[in-house]
Length: 97
Figure 1 (cartoon, rainbow, N blue to C red):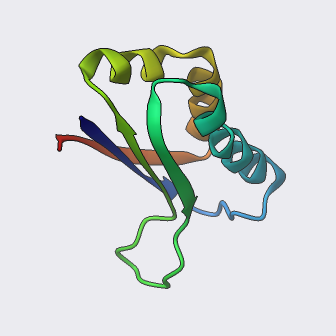
Figure 2: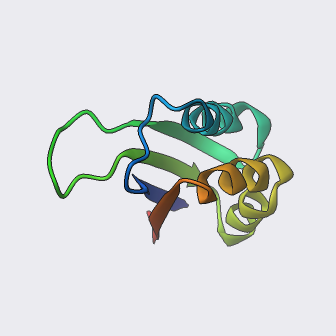
């Protein structure tokens, strides 16, 4: 099993209340039901007000590297990620569990 973690930081001056950001969050929220390789899917906004905190997070679980690749290349994931490229940066970690 592979735990796929992603932390997003909104670009300077961008807020989560903007329409494009809300649309991006909605796109990610729906991926769990669209991509069969996802065994677990959680995403949401950070709830703390700390300078070192990221703004949005994804926590997911897939069976193996092939499943991770299928998720990453799935058209729905590609579409959602392309929205976020317009207003955020992110870091990832894929850990075997």
